[in-house]
Length: 371
Image 1 (cartoon, rainbow, N blue to C red):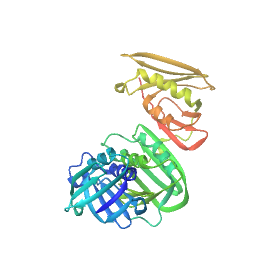
Image 2: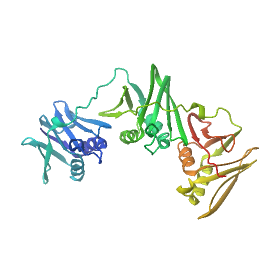
Image 3: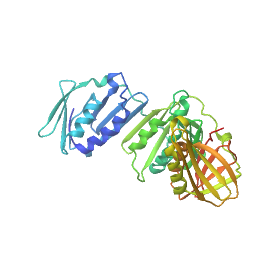
Image 4: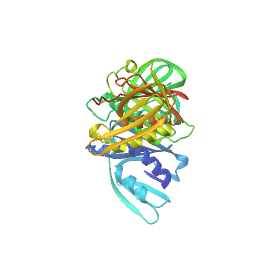
């Protein structure tokens, strides 16, 4: 194997591929990146069995391609070496079986590799009719829901995001049982198959880091036990979480006694300031008190102190309700609108956050009983 490639081109592909390497992996071959040079270009592979990534540098982006071949090389070493080399052409050559020479005009690294035949055979086959979705739209879907997944492995399904397709509507839900985020997206075509899958949230976070905020499109290829995403020259394969995701439609109230339209900035900043006097031990609890046209946000911690902040608002309702400031801030932040609507019934019913400008996004936060 022998090639020459510009540093920035190789580093970009290596950075993407290395996202599939787990620091906790005890299997030596899975700590490496497989270089596979073919006539059409250079393929880079990495896998931790949970996520597998293949990136591709086509022949026309290589400075030269002299001998095809393959090798597996330590992932963290090769990425750091390429990162710290000067911005110039980099020569890569495999000699004596499994030794890789990485060199520039003035620097040479001699690295011990592993037999590429030991690397797992990754099944990266695609379906004939993938779901096509805009890059930016997909990033929004994940960013507006993933914060609501559970961080606890006691209920593994809740560490993932539920994707359901009904006709031409993609329904995406994340919940940790204390809060819920839901995003609806209209697809370009209707899908008659019954799609209901759960993708690990941490895998989707890694995927979004690889996507640009541009008008390109992402292909989603669905299988029984895995999902494959294809974007430009990157293929990202994730396992699915097994089990039936809980049905959440019955926990979202359909009618509300109180609809409170608030300025995004006012509400967010009030809650953010009140949260300064809360602690994790007390569930970051703050209180919202609505008394006709006066809205008050307050928090009271025996150890720290208390704070109250009031604004005038257009309302003729009354309610006192407590909730986690952290959960509410996460929910509000997902909207990026000038105004949001808090929908409430009583101090024990879920708080639903919506926007009159965008009915595709819904956030739900359960109240906290304080007495």
